[in-house]
Image (tube, rainbow, N blue to C red; front, side, top):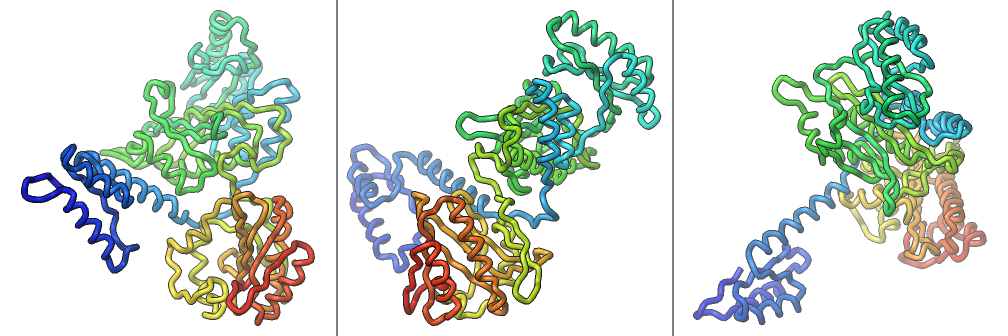
Length: 515
């Protein structure tokens, strides 16, 4: 920062700063520099010098502070994006066939809006907890179902069932805390009368009856999916209940979500502070809410037919989460389309490329695309690589594999690159990696393979390469290249074998990448 005075030239001061930067012994280690030369005419030439040197310069201290704040925000965002998500406790629930069967039933009936029981069945198939819901066609049926449910629940909830009524509570179509079959029957009759008065054109399919879930300190949340015309499907989270539009506390994120991204989405809302607990109110099950968001994201990935989805409310407290009401709208033309959803802005994890196979010594292994959570496997993998293998792979000796370095290899954009990993049956040990990076035109790709030094000769390299070739062909790449170390016979043999199928394979000697 410089303030013009009669004793010193602002331009000379600027030149002194530039000279000091130029003489720094390690230019790449120079911290970010932002300048603020006060004055209009007196600082004009100094600012011109800074701009010519590519150094940010500002007219006021406030502007400089704002610029620094933007740099800080960018750095924090980059660090956040490079975080390794927690290790998955098991495979993601894949229930697209069960969901598709429910959607087919709706399409055959000429409907694009699933009923509440159908919507809840889809959510249940993907592991999102829902309250058991039964359908009644007449008030008398409501009484019979209520009689059965009241044997296990203190009270029941009755809702009107109609494709033409989106917000049932607006017309008195929801009654809570009904403690007898007679109350339930009378509530259903009043709903029919009210619907005939306020929505005479609405088609009434009947009623839904469910146990009354009473959690006095639970929070009402909103989870949803909607279609953005530019970015495609979006995941929505926020405060729920009948006042959700008034409270206006929601945040959105692009699917697919993992647990880390789901928690980030929750942190963007005001209600998240309440979910963490306050005074005598215990924290809600944040992990359960995040899990529901992850499973909702998986539903969007696996079921392209889902156009809109609302879970309101999803109640959450320290004991867990449960969806009390849900609504799903589908595109009938996309019901038979397999996932992953082609409209996603971010290509999801391609689980269709997972396959089990056996090595030459009979060990059963899993070959699948790499995941960000695989970062924790790298330490043991690198420890079993010889210094020579590391040098061949990275073209230089390397002793340290930092989080920042490894994250570049585990957190990839599946639309631009691919890495297949070979794992043991329990997915606790990393055996080998085959990597493919495409050029900007997506016509050519470069590959590299590395296998754990103690597992060479088991056929792992060939299996990984075969998978990589199939993937490249499926993606439409016209050329696949890789460098082969000529002194390694297996490496050269592998390169020569595949060159006939996917030319050309370069062989550079003596200092080329092994692969």
